[in-house]
Image (cartoon, rainbow, N blue to C red; front, top):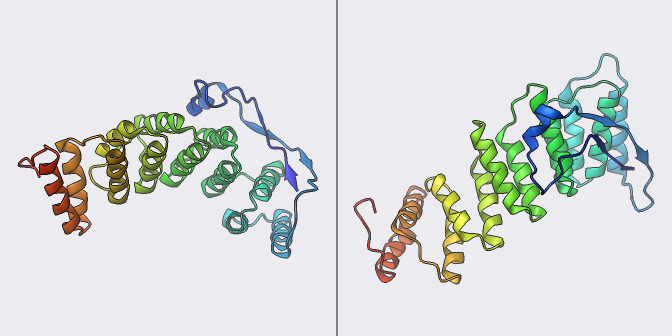
Length: 258
């Protein structure tokens, strides 16, 4: 089953001047159900059983708790049947069942995996409009979705919006964004972001340093100190000492903070 998932209106598409939070001010968000069969889709017994169980829950009275629907949707995500997740999520709303935060996050992940980031952001708008508070997993999923599409600058802009609104990202979110910036050669932006997380992303920091070496860019003392601090906190003392030697070799002598 392939679903054409329609969002009305969809005027705020990436990448031009896209601001997902504008949905809160000028968008009435709702879905129009539109189903069509896809000849290319193949169904397995597990998927058929999951869909059948979902439809059974859908018509039970009283309506089962959201967690039961979420478990089925999560199993479909794990098997990468993202179209089914979108279709079943829409069915829930069509019969009047409101998606909770967990199920909205599952839907966002599915849209991102399908490359439909504008639709994923419209679900974020719905989350905010319904008074839910998105968690770090939701934001990280959206950033990863943008990075997968190559919209790294939009991902960075979205990060700034998230922070400005008082939300936070975890290590996974920052790591995703930093690695995405490195892949497109934006080492300076990655470096600036790395400094904000104060030595918490050791593996990403090491990758960034290697990228900087390849581009013949020399980190400053503050950057070295940030990585050395993270290495020491994670128990990688030998690597930290190696960086101190490297600082001397590169003309960046350690300071008192080092």
